[in-house]
Length: 243
Image (tube, rainbow, N blue to C red; front, side, top):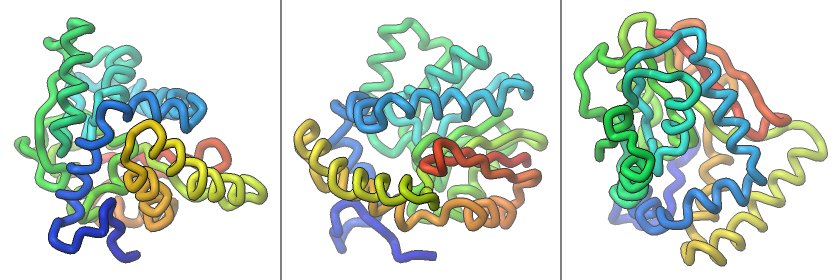
């Protein structure tokens, strides 16, 4: 595994603590910047990931690293589950999610909870499906986080992970690296006042064990029928597995 990439290079704080601080810092501009910097393609990627669960018709879904809840809201709309519970390490992000839930009148369908994705505050075999959108690369211990997702899934339940990956094809690879390394931190600094958070983004993507390496890790913690589906020339990937 690559060395641990952290947002603020603070030797006193763990990656987990730094990630929580970072998302607290950028929570108010997070949604806007997500859509702006991905040119809106992130919305298409989310829909593709959610559609992986369509035929499974899950009734109770856990959305890990739920952030401001965008992925969960989309899942509610497409999958019509009985309930989604979102968990996140950042109180600032959950505050925004709670405002959105109240505004949309969805408190009976979507609830959020402060919690650690590597030590989920739920019983074993509780959920029909677990989703994680752009969250696994922020785990302090990736294997531990995946193992805990497996623990809270019911037997036969499905996990869907959406995460940035590294395109291999010329010239997409070169354009992607340039955009992520030079344009993204500048835009992030301009709008969020936290340039470091948006420098961490390309660093964390570069260090993330994507593709077959991530699939092998899913296999290792006990997932079956694991698959990787690259999107948009490999800029993003959907990973699925069954407990």
